[in-house]
Picture 1 (cartoon, rainbow, N blue to C red):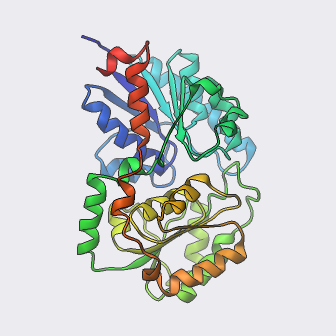
Picture 2 (picture 1 turned 60 degrees about the vertical axis):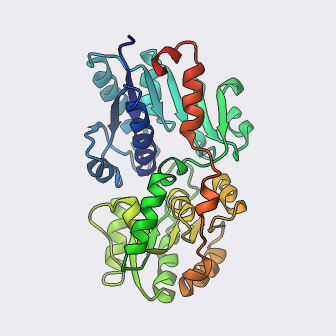
Length: 359
């Protein structure tokens, strides 16, 4: 009988919460215990509350400045270290989405580190984490060399034919979405601004979301739900668009949110892919081409990617005027995609150090 079946997940974004909760549930069926650490940022807390999971909240988001990010990360490393060394059972493995904080702690405490990553453009965190990983799991649509250039050993990189969001959108959840959609009496557009404080953003002071949201209000006739990423965005949007958009105080569970969505417009990739997998037209405006976006677009999912403000405005107008024209039945597409847990479980069962725990 193998003991110490504890898996430690560090969660830094809402997408990571959804992904790692789904993988954690699979691990529980094999007798594992899960430990989730996170920080109070964005809608992460609301997601854990919905799933009735109590994570350990440690540290804070560092904001837009390099100094703030560094100090926040350094403080969080100390807090995470104390949390882990005080546990009765040392985690068997650490799973992160390139969390520099948890990766440093796992390395320092000799805990095998498994990294999931679909953002090779986030070079700073890649350089800090890839070289420490035992395995790096990533969608096959991203060039392996992009990770190697950031320090990943080619031998640790393992790919799957899908996107991360399939893990918690497909199967039972997809059918649940269809049921919720069929019974939803309300329709609205979901808008999510760009992640302007991220280290990979070129201009952290630029606020394209304000101009794009103006167009959404002009051309879309129904309710508009806005999901800000930061408190600063929330305050600006509420002041500038008071009475014109709805900004929820708490997060809305993803499937419930998508059930009434005519379209999704976002400055990032995750919620656009989540929507497109469900057949809802989505627009991603981002300064560079995102490989997971192009991957699902080539397969026929209703995702639309643009890199300039002018192109965004043209596409937003078209979709806002007639979103139904761009919707797609994706029930046959989604079953053909692999989940990240498919390759993860395969690796764990083959690993000489870990396979006895995954029988």
